[in-house]
Image (cartoon, rainbow, N blue to C red):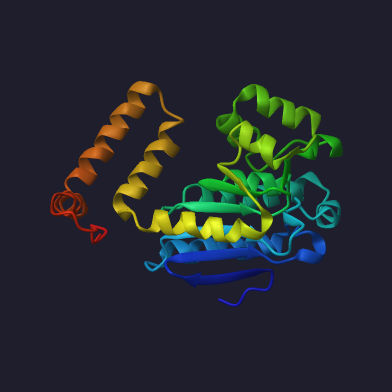
Length: 261
C-alpha cells in the first residue's frame, strides 16, 4: 500500500513504521491513524515480519499528540466520540498485535503520542525524549488508553501525578519509574531498537506470542484465572515442534531452527 503520512520499511524480519509529519511534530490526524491501522495489519499478516518498530520522523518528536487544528474543527461531541473510538481501535490493534512491537521514542511523546508508545510491547527512548499526558491543560482527559495503560505500567500514584498535573517528564525519569525499558543517545536510538528487535525475532514465534499473551491478558484477570491461563498456554507450546527443536538444539549444542509450529 502507498502511504501518505507514514513510511513503511521491512528488512531482516523487522517492519519499521515511521510517523512522517515532521513539519507538524508528527501530530496525529484521522487520515494518519487510518494509515497506521493499515500498516499494523500489514505487519501482522506478513509472515516475514517478526517484530514491529514504531518511531517518528525527524529528531524533535515521536508523536506530539493529536493535531489540535483538526480536533478543534471536529469539536462537537457527536464527532469527537466516534473519532476517538476509531483511534482507540488502532491502539488496541497495536497493543494486541500477535508480534512484539517496540516504540523508538526520538523526541516528544505527548498526549496521544505517549499513549501510542504505551500501546507498544516495549519502549526505548532517546536521551532527548519527553513523555507526558497534558490533556488536563486543554480541559479534557486522555482518551486513547492513557488513564488505563499508564496506571497498569507505572502504578496508580505515578499515573495520577502525570495525568492530573499534565507536566512532562524526561527520558531518565521515564526509565526510573518504568515507563521505558532503556534510554540511549539519540544517534544510537534506531540501532538499539533494531538490535532488540533482532534479538526478539530470533526467538521461537509461538512461545513469543504465548508469553506476550500471558502477560497482556493475564494482567486483567484474577491471579487464579491468570495462572490457569498461563498453564494452558504453557501446555500448548510444550506440545509444539519448536519445543522439541529447542530441547534438541540445547542438547546438541547448536543454534535452534524455529518452524513456528
